Length: 221
Image (cartoon, rainbow, N blue to C red; front, side):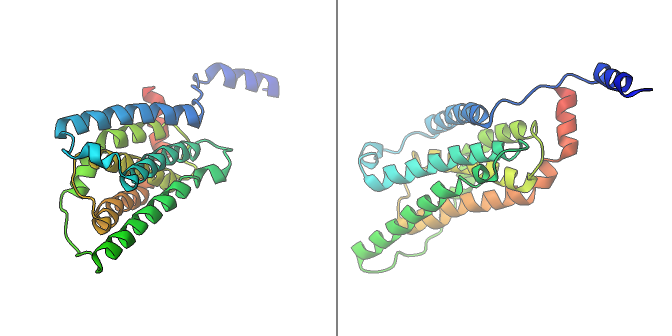
């Protein structure tokens, strides 16, 4: 068999291939689904009674802005990580708002300490972790489904960024109904929960997203 006949046979037997949409488009779809999910969750739990006051405070607004920006950029980075040939710098872009977010939270801790003249007491908030998991569950499932249609070039990093996006979205929704605003509590229990969930997702990345999962997704597509 000559080369031309081989190419023709391979092309005739090849299955149809669906080209993935650009990462920016896929991230936009994920954000739309996640925002809808978070709004429903906040509606179920109910808005905190002091929400109007909180929306006038620069700390609350800036923390929420950086939280949702981290979620959006992490989703974009995750989708870039499953497309071969994408510049690797785009994958690490979410760490910019993440660092700004933790910086604002750290500054909030400093302001709280300066206002009281002493360090804030270390309290336990058992609601943060499960609440973030519940609010971020649907965004997380949507992220896994969408990531599994891409190539597992960096499976751990891609899934870790996907977990960061979902957890940040969950934390964003949590702040609208959970009345905990002390800087140290937010930094440790809320931001800490987001980081922990991202690490757990990254550790499971090779199990969630691999070439076998891609093949299974193509078969069911």
